[in-house]
Length: 214
Image (cartoon, rainbow, N blue to C red; front, side, top):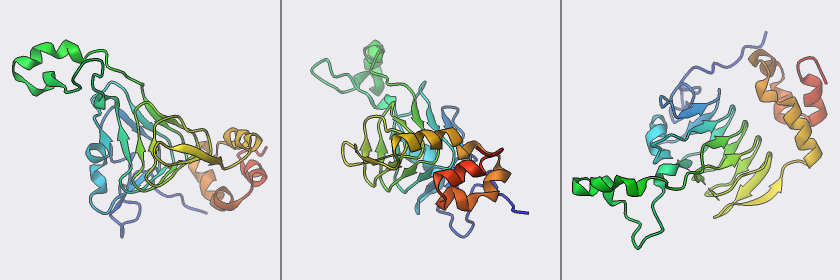
C-alpha cells in the first residue's frame, strides 16, 4: 500500500538540509502555513520567520496554503514597513526612543492592507517579493525576481517589477473545474494513491480520481 510522506518532519529531504517544511518550523501566531509547503535556502532555511517575513509587527497575518514551493530569497513585506507620507519627512522618529517616543500617535493609522494570503499549490521563483495585503490564488506561479504588488488570480503566472499577469495556465472554465476538484484538500492517503494524476494527468483524469469520482 502506498505510504504518504510525513508532513511533520522539518527536513523532508534529509540529504538536503537547505529544504524545510514550513508548518513544523514556524512559531509565530501571525503566520499560518499548510502541510507540505516548503522553503529552499542554502544559507539557513530555518531562519525563514526572521529573514523572509519582514516588518511583521501585527496584527495582520501571513497565510500560506498547502503544497506551496518557495524558492530561495522569497520575501513577504508586511504592513509594519509602512511610513507616513503626508508630511515633509517619512522618517519614523518615535521608534528611535528618547523624547521622540512621546509622539507615537504620529505612527497610528498608517495604511494597512490586511492579511497577506497565499492559496494552495503556488510556486514562487527565486527572489520573489510579495507586498503587504496581497492575495495570491491557487495554482499560481510567481516568476523569479517578481515584485507582487497586487492580487494574482487562480492559476495565473506573473512576473516583473511590478509584477504583471503574463498568462493564465488554464481557461476560465478549466480553472473553475480545478477549484471544484481541490485536490489539495483530499485525504493524504488518497493524494498518495493519485500522485501521478495530480502531477501529469488531465483535468478529467483529476476529476475521475477525486474521492467518490465526479
